[in-house]
Every structure is written in structure tokens, then in C-alpha cells.
Amino acid sequence: MILTNQSGPYNIYSYFVGYNPPTSINPNPIFPKIKRTAFLSPFTFVVGDVTIHDHTYVGPFVSIRADEGTPFYIDRDCNLQDGVILHGLKNKHMDVNGKKYSIHIGPRVSCAHGSLIHGPCKIHQDVFVGFKAIVYNAQVGEGSFISTDAVVTGGVTLKPHSFVPPGAHIDSQAKADSLSPVPKTEEEFAKEVQRVNQEFPSSYSLLFGKTRCSCGLSY
Image 1 (cartoon, rainbow, N blue to C red):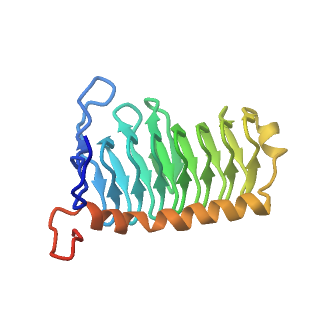
Image 2: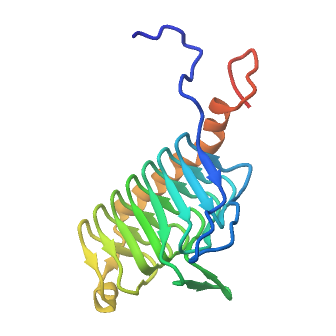
């Protein structure tokens, strides 16, 4: 079949946002709190006590499940790219300003395609989490760069601006403390990823809005 009508988009704009199912682990159903200027792509899944702040972009096939570990907090200007997974273990938390979180993500964090963020974890501002990287049971300092296929776990704390090389397995504090600063090339790459993705919440909202004007834009 060849589509010749250019008025698109053709896909059905569908995602699921809802209460977590009541279980013995997490008996209280809570609906996510999502700011109006955030954007959820088609085929995203968000349940439970999740906060998503302004101008955050959530890509296709992202799963944010606060159905076991809870709550999750995603600050403003973040981007969770295609296939990112957020989940947390029951009764395991990080303390942030006197409040307990399963996952806490600071502002301007980029989670690249296919990365896994598993609570308990705390990711500070301006962090880049690379393609298929894993962050679990860890704290990641401001401005750090976690490369493709790397794993950060074991209760470690990365100091600010730590560089985790591709494929590295950081599972002890000694390994975390030995990391070098982020190279200039990776720092610039992370900034460019952030810049590009900052345009997506507003531009995709125009594309997928329910009301379409005669000029072809939606809102």
C-alpha cells in the first residue's frame, strides 16, 4: 500500500497513563502527575505515583512503572528516549530533601535509547545515560556521562562529572572513585543531545494536537 495523502500523521495517538494496580506490595492506587508542557509519545506506558515535570520529552515505547517501587520523580527538561525503562524494587528508596523516592531524576537528564533506570537510584542534573546503559542502586553525580552498555550499580555514588567508559561495570565505590572527568567531546555531545530533545515537547505537541487549524498545525 502506498500512502499519497500527506495530511498525516497516520498512526493512532495512543498511550496508557493510569493508576497502579492495587497489590499487597503497593496497595494504594495513585494516578501519575504529568505537567501539561511535558510530551508523551505514542505507545508509552506510565502507571502509579509518577511525577513528570515541564518540558520533558518521553519517547515511543518508554515504560514508567511505579507499580512496585514508588514514587518516581522526573524533573523538568529531561528526555527519555525510545525504549527506556523505569522500574523500582519494593521498599528500597533514596532520600532527597527528606523525602523517599524509588527513582529521582534531576533536571536536564538525557536517558538514551534502550537504557534502564531501576530504583533505588538518584540521578542528579545534567547527566547523560547512554544507549542500553543500566543504572541500578546507585547515585549519579551532576554532569556525569554513562557510556553505551555501561552498568552502574552496587550502591555506588558517582562524584560530579564522572565519565563511565563504554561497557564498564561500576559495582564498587573504589571503581566509582577512580573514574576520570568527562572528556570535552562527550560533554559537548551530551549538551547537543539535550538541546535537540528540548525542542521535541513543543514540536510534537503541535504535530499530535487534537485540534487542527487550516494551516495544518495541531494544538
